Image 1: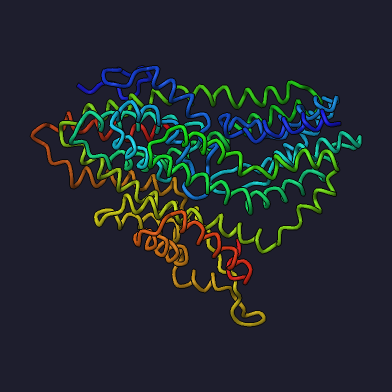
Image 2: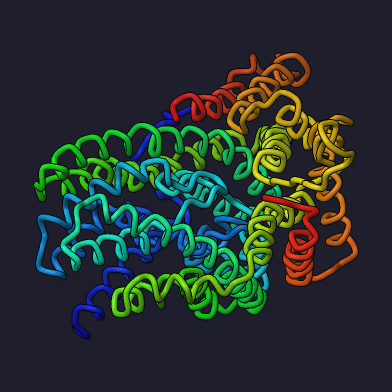
Length: 280
Length: 265
């Protein structure tokens, strides 16, 4: 009953076919073009999956709803973004064809994959493959050989595009296999539960890791002077980040427009830098 | 000279298209160097200077939210001026690295807020289901953050870098500092929006669990994710595998499939 979960030749027995996935691969290429400090790869991810969403949700209100759901924060090593994209497509497909599908599971699974995949992707592509390409490329280029830049480009990008291309199909078949096997057994609820658990832990971890707050105001004089930040960290580490997170969360709860919150953050940052309260 | 300036601008445009073209490392000095060399009729120097800069900037990659010096303007301005003045390869470094640093600050101070405005326009486009507007704003957002480089690369090439460096220093230091602070704070908004969508009483504790694992344990997000998966597996085995009557056979594999996925990648 359980078929191979690792298959780059998925079955296309629902609405999505191979050419949709090939298109998804092409549209994954500009994924980082719109990478921003606020929600990172959200627009890139949404832009890639947009035609598939349009196909799956012909009713305009459902399409808009799906777009907005996908525009939440997302971050992924660009070279393997097709993997979570493919998984998302399989889940969106199931959601579109099944009224009872719990759509929060789509975001939960996306987020649960964000941490582990990015970590592995970053270290492989930026750590290993790039260093290899740079090593080969610069050795030749320093001697003035045009082969240097050419090999640099190929050593990095041939594996990159192979993995990016096949990641699309791997992700889709992985996603649809899991869904087919669990849809009727009540297992989906459990996957959603565990995925949101893992997802929430990843979001918590990323909040502490990627947000940087540094109160540089000095308290005390001479040698005993210490910054406010080190005092705060003495209460418990991360307290400043957590407090500001709470404030931002509260502003969102109060239905403040995110655009307005963004401007508040910009203005506060510049003012705090002017009065030397916050530093980078 | 006008033609050369235009061609230099095109090399810059290609460099800033890095992220549109799959983050394929077109913006690295080792690639831009030869292109600048080709434009100025000295391919050989371009290759060597590109490689010199490449080695100097090997640490300048954007991982996570770290924003490295602007490689595109640094490489192009540094290498083109070094070739024009028949200087040694090292000169490309001394000319290029300050430009890369100034340009990064300028991009952060002026490019990022502009970009975020267009990202929010993508939201309003989605609100109306307008895919064309979303595409347009996505494209503009990516290029508008790099406007300083697109404008100043040709200017610096045409007028010489010292004139441009003076011009660039008009942005007050506290604004540059402030934008560095903002770059650290802005992800708060993204994570808060995400949490608002995902957070409920059942999972809120896990947010704090992940948060404090990093705060106290100095573990990376990947590390936290590994612990999270292990914890989920333990919880499943001990508390959730309630279907022994089915011999657990058609149920069990699906979770294992998921963990297979993590293992293989």
